[in-house]
Length: 217
Image (cartoon, rainbow, N blue to C red; front, side, top):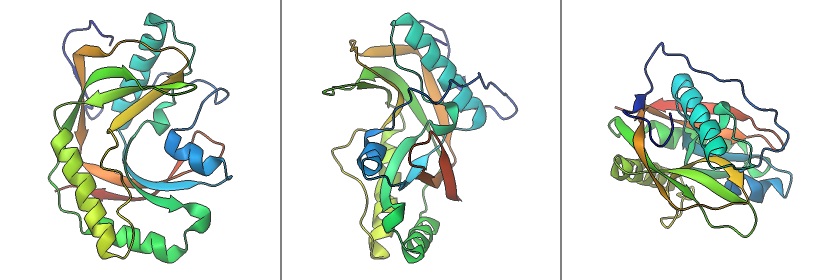
C-alpha cells in the first residue's frame, strides 16, 4: 500500500505477506546499533516487533515508497523491523545477572494491549545518511506508558531505565542521502501491540536474537 491507497492494513492472523528480502549488502544499522557496532559489540534492548504478516506488509510499503520517491537506500529486512523501547546495554558488557534482572523487570510490567497507528512518513535529519521512518499518532500515549513502565521496572531491579524522554518513537524503514517533506499517510498502518520483546542485535548482521517475550494484559 502506498501513500494514496485507501483503507488501512492490520496484522491479521493467517494473512501471510512476506516479500523476498534484499541481500544484506548495503543495509545499515540503526543509530542505536551503530554506537555499539563501532566497538564491535552486540546491543541488547526491549522492542516492539510486528507479526510476520505486518512486517511483510511494512517491508512492501518501504519498497513501494523507495520506488515512488526514487530513493537509493535498501529497505531493512522484515525480520528486523521494530520500534525501540528501552536499551539494556552491550552484550559483551552484560553478565548473565543483568539479563536475568532485565527479564525479571519485564515480567512485572502490567500494561493493556493496544494498537499503534503509523500515520506519517518522515526523513530524519542527519549529517550523512538520513533515516526514513514511520511515526505514530494514535497509540503513542500507550507506547510512552509502556516504555515508562519498563523503565520503572528496570530501576527497581537496580538497572538504568534505558530511554531518553526526548527520543521520538519510530520505525526505521531504510537510510538514504535524500530528504523529503513529511508525508501524511492516507492509508495508516495499524499494528496491534500484544507483547514486547528483549532482543540482541547481532554485530555486523541484519539479524536479531530473541532473548525473551512478555505478553501485555
